[in-house]
Image (tube, rainbow, N blue to C red; front, side):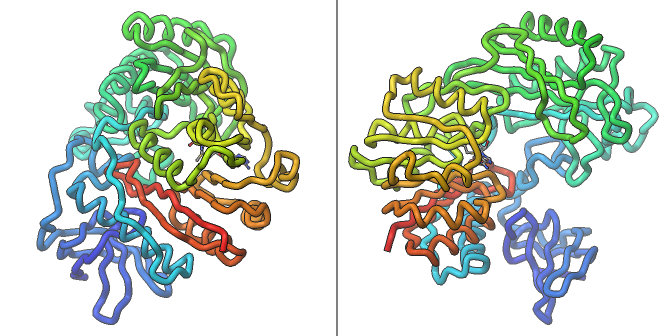
Length: 462
Ligand SMILES: C[S@@+](CC[C@H](N)C(=O)[O-])C[C@H]1O[C@@H](n2cnc3c(N)ncnc32)[C@H](O)[C@@H]1O
């Protein structure tokens, strides 16, 4: 059917309506386009469609930079002008807070753009796979593509069992891609196969490359199956990486016995350097271990944390809880303006980093506790009654227990940092039903050209 696309929905699809009002999400379509779309799935109140032809181009369309655009699942909005991406993200947050959170005219500010539009990602997680995804030009002569059973790169959109053998990527700095290409070449010749979840066999699993943008330090984590006989191959690869890229200050080898396709492991061997890198944010230095969460857009994170600290409205004496604190970034950036900060975090290596970071920065009024947030908040009074609570949960948002417990802790301010507006909306709604008022929501674009959006919000006690 022919459709006018009037906006970009959260998730990155263009949104159009049939004459009788049915909402159609059209993958890859842009606001302002008139398109021909083929319906793929019909639900009660909406349908999903595939873009088959653009009849009228959008004035906001632009030329994508990457050769893999269209196949790669990494960034899907490169063909939309950046100002339009930002406007769409503000609108999406407002819409979600109204629809899911039930807020009437929510106090959403215009989204803050990312300081850099390309080369902004300080961490890339490349995957190995035994089925190489062939791009349109390669499909013309598939038999001429070498090593079709070996690939290192990123997944095509929605195809978790295929890998694009990446030639370029503009999200990290160019050095990350150069390191990945060296690993592509060396592992491809190693005689060891990529791991496959089909049979749970094979060796190479993931390559994680992390950059300390402000410190110039680099970390490479090679993630493989647990096969002691193959370790020599990893050691040789580490030596080669270090020889070609002397700026790589840390190389680790993580082995995994898990059958799941996630870049984590059971055991970490440190092959080069201290096993972690450091980054600078807001004048403080942070140690980051391979397993620890760290915001992937360094300059964007600095802006995010500055906004969060301003919303906390600290006067110097407050007790601040930083729930889901990771390596302690927010807690430590607030410590200088607070009486005391307590960070809560599940991942043990992140807690170790947070404690080391407090010491590294000479901050003595910060403590970090390891464990599940819900369990620890139940014991809340052990750490004192908080004046300010910072929440920065994973994408799934707050667990029901945490949602229930937070309002009962009596803080005068809650600063909620979120990477998922849908769970944010539901959480804010419940916190507001229990004695708080939503004052402000600031979307920030930490992930240009992707559908993701970060938000920082302030709630105050009624
Ligand atoms: C979005 S990150 C925020 C980290 C930190 N605030 C920052 O900006 O770097 C979410 C953090 O929550 C942690 N986490 C996940 N589930 C948790 C739980 N049940 N209890 C405590 N922490 C948890 C993760 O390990 C991760 O470090």
